[in-house]
Length: 252
Image 1: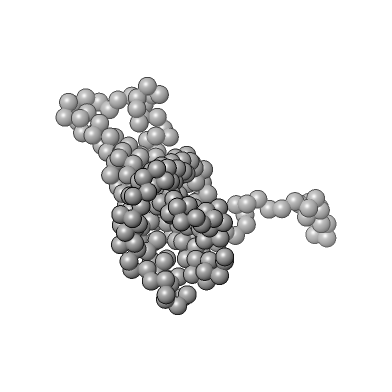
Image 2 (image 1 turned 90 degrees about the horizontal axis):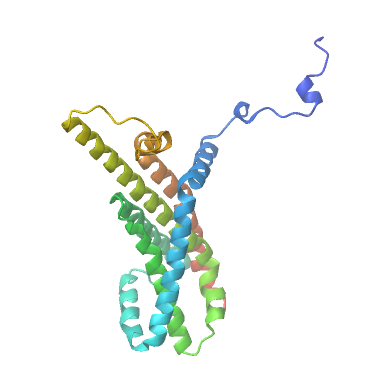
């Protein structure tokens, strides 16, 4: 082939393989996050969504049937949100909402540090219960509940609740992975104390197949958690806070 001949790949309109294309740092992180979502978080996200729905239905039914409990519950919610002042300028309100929700998400993820307890699942249950409480109060006041949900909750709630569910998924993944590591360490210490050789690798041995060993021992849990929180949860909460502060008040 002479130097003037066209390149075969160019002539066929072929594109270079993905590995040959330059990859930015942020793009690589999001590709890793997509892999983590498919591998770890997606199943926990489903559990978190069901917990949110359960909390909403349970809260709505409870306060609808026992409206005398609404006042006490509402006072508790207002006390928990006392640092949020709705009369602040929109920018200050957005930053306050973002800080409040980010702090709650940090606690939800951190609760996953307790092995096998799956405490983060309580976060979507409580969020759903609060939504059920507000819906019940609106119903008893004769307000149009579907309209309020569409105008006052849904615009920012799409992003905020997605962030809540994603943070819960990360926390549940952390709790399960920490439990696997703790169990693997306990098995290893027990084997050493008994002076026995390590158990053979096989499907009959819990945490001894290659995928489970890889997840329990080699994977960077801290790296996955921080990446997921900063790349997904925080951006969603930031968008939700600005929508709630700048757009939601003008919807009616």
